[in-house]
Length: 293
Image (cartoon, rainbow, N blue to C red; front, side, top):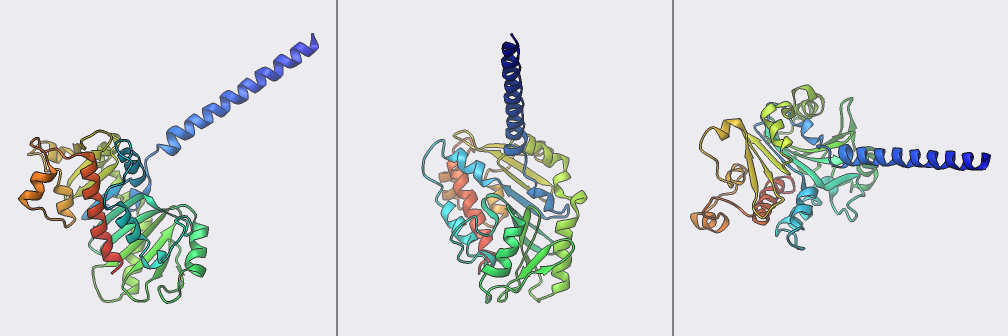
């Protein structure tokens, strides 16, 4: 009888452990894997525009319909690894950065930025100190708010702190180290005044959009799970004439002829998710080329 009680007690304990473990895993999956990215927190509220592309989830969505990646996907990846800090990276995990999981592009009065997610600040410190070719960047400069390195051949900076890293090109072509440090400090310290706190912008993230764009008080998010890209607009747009699905790409410097528009959009002014992805990677590729010239 005592053995039966002991056996039942062990079984009950095991069941409780299994249930607790299952609950922890469920919470992790709900709030860890599927939680919103914190990368937009570095975008200051006075940014002229910002563009958040959750490339891993977008790529997964694209593969539901076909096994091939969009045309510009590889071009974007190879552009990233040409950046001075990432020059000749063979293993994507080597520098401690997610190269293609989350990408945020934005611009403010100081210049242009491209941000990626850091997986290991310790690994990134070692990478910048010991691995990057010495003729490409200076040694790391450690500030209270961030660590940064400067390209030796260009007025380009790379800064990082905790889970975010930023490539920065000042709008002023003259080299101004104090000015660059001030611009980067505003990016890494002013979380309370981040553009992420904008309520209209929050509504786009509530729609589980994989791509979010904001510029000049106008924003939209895009969900790419279906055959056609589903657009969600902020109130300032929704109450006026709907924007063309190509508006975002035009804002970041891509121009379209009438023939292009007829080819890309159907008669209902819709764009297929696959075509949207291709145009998105093209836009990001064109933007990031500024950082590798």
